[in-house]
Image 1 (spheres, rainbow, N blue to C red):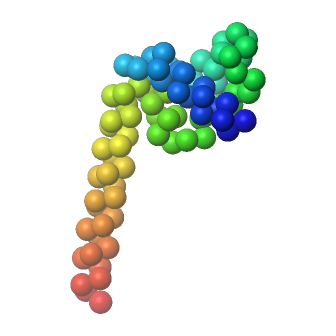
Image 2 (cartoon, rainbow, N blue to C red; image 1 turned 90 degrees about the horizontal axis):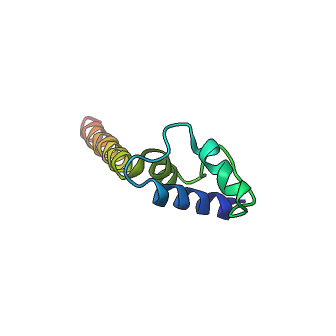
Length: 87
């Protein structure tokens, strides 16, 4: 099933690269792939965080997601470094 979900995320992302299928629309967009016989299993998300963001929000949303994740990691790194020096 995970391979099918990965394939569904990749197909949906490739089909709608600019905007994606829309937030919380993965399952609904995956249904036609099952009906056409391209997939045998579908779920509410792709079980891969980055692929899911790409399928639902497209390239732009994926870039924003990666930027937000990098910002959070940078913030955590600076908070950890400042905490270590005060002990």
